[in-house]
Image (cartoon, rainbow over all chains, first blue to last red; front, side):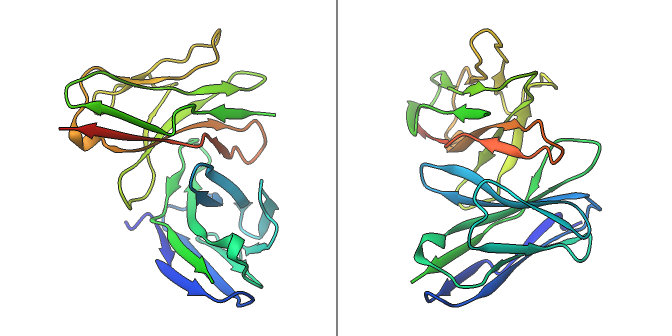
Length: 112
Length: 110
């Protein structure tokens, strides 16, 4: 039981490049979330999904897109990376019956 | 709008001393509050939640609705408690997402 996994662990991009971060969970959770973690700002919600095929915007969605084609996967895309998107990205999931969110190990992204 | 405030960015205590990490919230309704902990370069993990009223790793937190606070306390800090601590509030919307405070970095000195 791997829980929540994220790939890649680290990535360096140049401004304007695109990339996709993958989050996978094996707990059959309905809800999945993408957060970014920045010093002094805690974690802020980017996008979330309440089930397969559905996505919604969070607090800081600009510059990001997401897709939830399969229940176990939640993809976060950056179409044209900017230095302001340098951050650590965390994925989380939770089931229907409990409000506890389970977090992945994070992806450290640097945009030059 | 809901909000979580952790007024201390950094907190240092000596091993064996009591520690209190402050958390205040604003929320209209009955809040559900959590403390998450993140050890160095690791993922966030749930430490405790107010509805379970548990004591985890010697930490406790009591919800004070009058003062809108959910402070985290431990009577005798250990070096392995050094970590980043986040207070978080469940939203009232259908997604039940978490609103996090900005975090407090706790350092327990030997």
